[in-house]
Length: 264
Ligand code: NDP
Image (cartoon, rainbow, N blue to C red; front, side, top):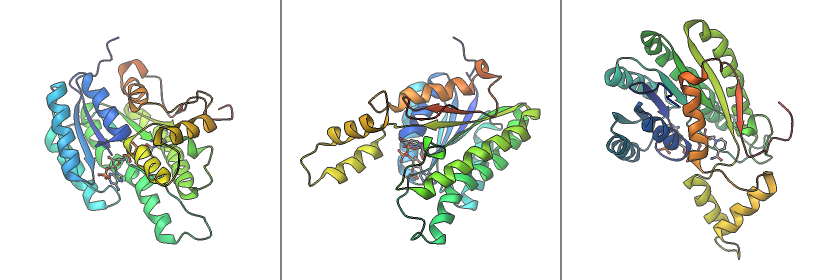
């Protein structure tokens, strides 16, 4: 299937590891040029160089904290300088939380609001003019199954990801007239290095191995009984970015091994 992506350009936040990096590689395999941003400049730069050489595309790594207004402006400027126009924006930077609503302070709420919602607002505001130059584009927002089906230990994560889903819908309605398609992806359990790190910490003084711990979580939550590899998710992003998905607008897609317990 020719996805019609060769020569296009994409900006991916949180593109240095995990889901964002897997999406970057999937797009690069189709010939898409990339700008990856993340806070750890050294890591994002190293991954961008590796992807560029492995897939023979242009790839730029930018050190940026997407909760910081000025950093977002620098990402937009870097994208303009690198490509002149942008076809794809993946708002993906994010992280889980752990708190109770009764105990978490306003600063914590504000941080996750900035990370999961305002970063997507600000990057979209900055990148959409570069999509107009291209005659259209695609914005994908990585929310989470937790936007719909909350996990008890992370209310701030659940709330801000739910807000991101609504932002996507509103933005989709606002931009489709300009040939810019906005959609959301709600992943379930995706086995990133961070999951393994957390499992390592939680099992450090126990009889359980990291793999046993992860296996138990997957069996508890998902009918499929396992985590997905990031690559199993990434190709779905690439499809949504492609000319084969031109009628996909304003939707939320679950990639969760059957974890969602309701009918959408
Ligand atoms: P990882 O922790 O593996 O990667 C997160 C990426 O985001 C890294 O590149 C990280 O780089 C970057 N990042 C984090 N905070 C910021 C920030 N303030 N500014 C810029 N970049 C930032 O996460 P995943 O790949 O697991 O998750 C990616 C997205 O998918 C997140 O939004 C997450 O909520 C969502 N998701 C993940 C699931 C999973 O099971 N893995 C399930 C459902 C949703 P750096 O630290 O250098 O900034």
